[in-house]
Length: 240
Image (cartoon, rainbow, N blue to C red):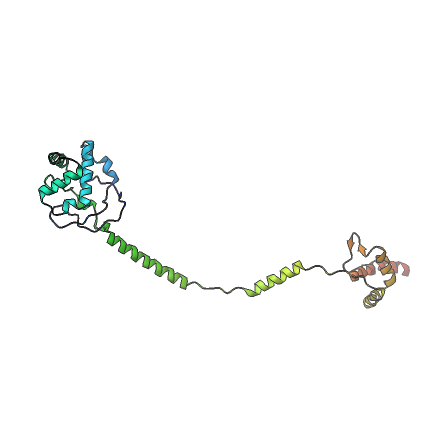
């Protein structure tokens, strides 16, 4: 039968045989069966009245539930099916005739035709559970191997130390400027061998608050060197 829609099951099935022929073994019931989306366009179903389409679906449920394969005598089986479908026994015979005419069931047994080609052994919950557990084990092995292959890189302590030292340098306060004494200026000038007058130098910058332009002086020795350069042209002019 072409018309059982695809994978509309909602519960895990129990194991069973699900034979197309009665009396071929006791079938354990399943809580769902495969149905296919093409059922809505199946020509055999479309030849039936609406109520008979439902009767066919009900028989599929009885097949999956194990009722059609429970080993009951034919007369008792038909009485069970009549109760399930909510009809009288005579009405069940007519339903069986109409379904058999379009090739959906066997008239004598009410077994759905082509059931075995649409329901698979792989639908067994035990088999699916086994495959699922095997896949879990394989994944655990892969994860364990991946974690073992990881190389741990030690922290770069030297770089971290340098970074901390740089932060300290950046955050350090500038050294406070201390004005020199005339004696300190004289000693530096003697080392330089220039003609800068220490007293004149100190008096000049003291009068300006030791400012160089608009900024506070940071290095008085640099200021001495600047004076040294500015006095050289004066000495040359005097020599001329």
